[in-house]
Length: 86
Length: 189
Ligand SMILES: [Zn+2]
Image 1 (tube, rainbow over the protein chains, first blue to last red):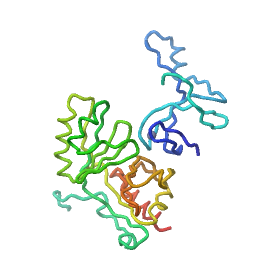
Image 2: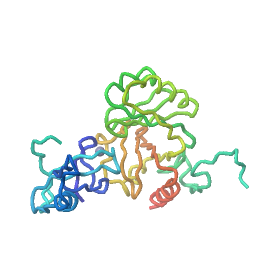
Image 3: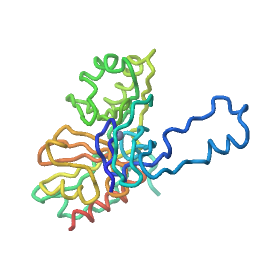
Image 4: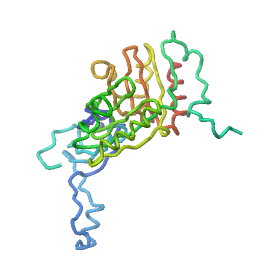
């Protein structure tokens, strides 16, 4: 089982969390101005990289916070989050 | 037909085996029914605002705090559970509303939504570890420690009361019976 570092609770077992998917996707600020193809891409299209991946996790069985984790999808290693506004 | 004026705790009809009710067992299991409980949510300014009402500081993450009449449990970065006798919690609720007015804050009575199971004795830690993946050994988790966590399939708020060790487990009332039966089963091994 993964140990996932919650910013509030520290490292906790994976079964306390829900996975939230790609943490870099941004909702278009003006949905009405977005083409159907671009909206489809925003809702459904994901990169699925093999390697480092910034993703959302939700501490469902804990403090109920959403936060971002950078995880290597190949090795499951948890990596430092690169500097970004989260 | 049940008397509608009689209140029943979620575990009123649960039969706890005799070996888990005595003071000499390695582990005992009891319910602490009918406590008053408030959820306090609040951000900036909430600590200073509620300190005079509670008579104590809101606990830091992963900690609990207690005065003679109230216990305060950390539940998340802007969330605390305040526990005490119903009457005490009743007037505390009003006082907290006044104290927190003007702040981005909320006070909600959740007394009936959860009940409390008390698991105590030298084997209590081992019983919990059958379903809980966090480190419960001091100093990682000791008297006064408090965290929402997962025990088996259940979301509980776990508080260590003393070094016996004694633990209080806050559980949604709809799941309380299933959870208690899981604990009884875990105590049997
Ligand atoms: Zn957490």
